[in-house]
Length: 427
Image 1 (cartoon, rainbow, N blue to C red):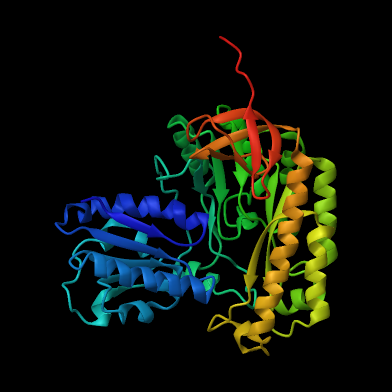
Image 2: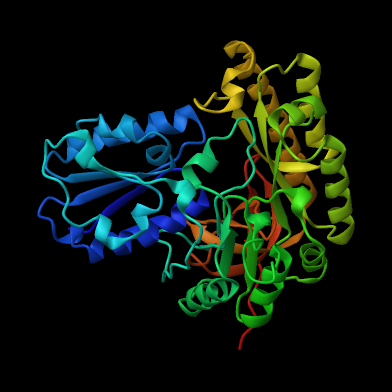
């Protein structure tokens, strides 16, 4: 039986799941009579952890004799929570999950918790190797890891304790991975990491993200589309801004780690930017690339947030011209400073999150309106759906997954664009 990998959370987890699948098969898990299921967990919110545990229990009910392995950020930050689960056979840390030997010699059923856990100190890891993969299962676009970990300590965030300190994949390894994926037919590659704009600080010569982007585009001329995942705008370097302005193959879509639109909350979050920095960045980049589309992460109901503070987050949606909004109701994570701050009432948190989502939905509909009648290049994903260069969802009745189709936007249904493919010229 093939090894099944269930992935929660970010694009980096998705990329690493392909490495895990290969390493687990190399260790022989695919030859087990009753199969093996690996859960690659997320720790960003308590809800993400709850969903992972629920899925683990369901997998055990459906596969009573399968071997169940749990790894990822939730397993790294709280291994005891998963070793205590009777459904789990093995718990691996974020570094251990990427090496075949950790999947070998699985403990027998019914072992004690100490034998079940192979989780070492993630802070002791100082390098990130380039792990080559040939494909990303079930995905029309490919993800490539360029960086892992984070040196910053935002007061709400547990992820540095799951991922360790920032470390970069050598630039040559990133380029080779992109070449490999393009050679295997991928038309779009997404660069991903935990704190991607910190890329290169630990490498010889300290190259920045902008230099990496320019190098990829120069050395992989057959790559049609290069996309960035979430970035911290305060760390955007001059080369990156120049690439955004001049490189058509770098997609006009940036997802920003804003988190709040209020200066006092940003300070209490221990962020490195203020609201005016975010607004100015969006204005500057829009001048460089008028068709740029911005998304952002925003937390609703951070501890001590008043109604007036929250309204600053509501207003920044329009002030930055945000289109794709990821709203997170604040979720206290044990071990973080924010968990010890005065908390906002849970009902208020939910109401504020709903208001932010409503503001995001209204901004998204205005964005859809603006695209009516435009010409767009759409990467087909699945079942008549694809994404424009600006990452806007579009319905289009043609093409195969991974193919780029030129189309005219005839309208929208409030959730996605309606696209009509342009007639293709005869060869």
